[in-house]
Image (cartoon, rainbow over all chains, first blue to last red; front, side):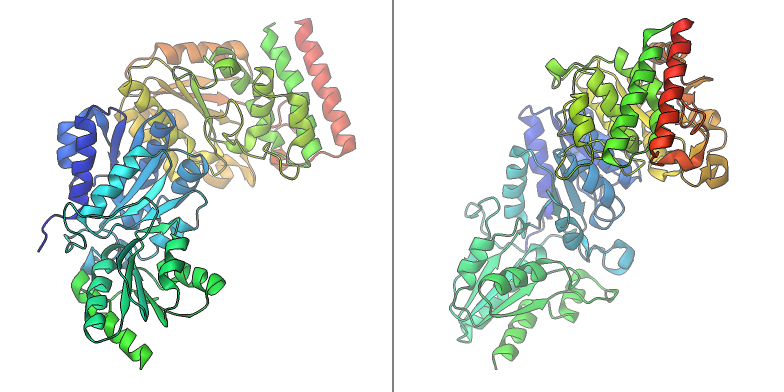
Length: 311
Length: 276
C-alpha cells in the first residue's frame, strides 16, 4: 500500500523547481503548511513562501497580486475553504484578471471525514468549473500528481487542483505513467460499459472494471483527471458503442464530473449514463473509506451498480 | 494655482460626457476621487510606451465603480483615447465597461466587487520586495468599501509584512449608496483603526487639494517599515452644488437640464481656480 499522499508529491515537485533555481515559484498558505505537507518547502525556501494566516480571501488576492508581477503563485488551503470562502477572489482576481495563480485545494472531498460538512468540499468541481477561464484538475494518484504539477509549473494560466488528504493506492506504475495535459487517460478498453472517474474515484473504477471483465462484462475505464477542460474527444471515443456509461465522483450529485459527462453524451452520442456521487445531503460521518463504502463508491459497489443496470 | 487643479475640472467634464454617453456611471465617487487619481498618476512611474515595464509603479482601483475617472485620467496620460471612451462606454461589445478591465492599456487588475484591491496590492508589494525592485504599489478604496472584511485581512498582512512600498488611499467622502457611512456602517475612527493594524496613517483634510495630496504621497514615500494609508477627506459629487454631498448622486444619471447646471458649475469652478 502506497504511503505517500498526493500533497507530499506536490511539495516535492515545487521544491525541485525551486532547487533548480526557479525563484518565481511562490507558495502561499493560510496557516495550512502542515496540512499541505509544505513545511519543508517553507523551511528550505522561506523567501519563496508567504504565510497569510487564517484568511483565505486574502490568500487568493495576495497570490493574484504576486502573479500579476510575474510570480508562479501556488495558493494552498483546504479545498472546502479555498473553493467557497475565497470563491470571488478565484473568480475576479484569478480567472477574470488572467493571473497565473494555481489554487490548490488540499484535504478535498470528504478527506476530513468526521469533521463534518463545513470541512467537506463536495461543491468545488461545480463551483470552480462554472468560472470562465478556470481549469479544474483532480489527479488520481501520486504518479499522475507529479506529472500534473510539472505541467502546471510550465503553463501560465490559473487552475484549481483538488488533492485528497490521505495516501491513495497507485493507479499507475512508477515509470509508466501515460499523461498528456488535458487528455483523459485510458485505463482499459471494453466493449459493453465505460466507467469514468476523477481523483480518488479512479482507483475504484479501475477495480470495478477488473471485477466486471472477470465476470464477462467487457468494461473500459477512463481517468478524467482534467474535469475542465473536459476531454470531450477522448470521452466520445471511449463511449462509442457502449451500452452504459457510469461516472463516479467524490462530489455532490449536481454540476460535477457526472453532469459534464452526461451533457457531452446527451448532446453528441445519446446513450444511458448513470452518475454515482455523494448525496445531496450532509455526508454520513466516517473515514473516506467508510463513506465511500456506504454510498457504493467502491470497486465492488460500482460493479454492482453496473450489473443491476444491465440485468 | 497648480495646473492639475485646473485640469481636474476639465477631466470632470470628460467624466460627465462618458456617463451621459454610456447612459450610466458612478458620478458621485468619480467626482470625489478625481484629484486623488490625477495626483497619483502625475507621480507614478507609468507610461503608455512602456506599459509592461517590470519596474513600473502599480495602481489598483479597488473602488472599481469609479472607473469613469480612471478612464479620464488614463486618457490624459496617453493610455486611452478619450473620444473613443466617450463614444463606446457601456455600448454593446465594448471593452470600456463600468469597472476596470486589464485588457485595456494601463489597467493592472480587474475589479468591481469591493474589498479585493488591498490584498492584490499586498501581493504586488511582496513581489517587489522579493525581487528587490523599487516600484511602489497604490490602491484607492472607498470609505463604504471598508465594511468588507477582506479589506482588513489585507490591512493585517500589509502591516505584518511591513510593506513600506504600499500606499492605500481612502476616498473619505462620508457617503455610500444608502446614506452616510455613519448611518449605514460606521467606519469609526479610521486613523486609529489603521494605526492599530501597524499602518502609518496620514489624514488629508482636503482631498481635493493637489498640494496636500502630493505632500501626503511624499510622506508615504519617506516612510520606512510600514505601509501608509492616506485618509483623504473629500466631497462626494465635488464640482457642482447640485450633486455635492448627496447620496442620491452615487450613481444618478443627470438629465439634460441637470447636465447643463453641472457643466456651468464645473466651468465656473475652473475659472475661479485659474484666477487664483
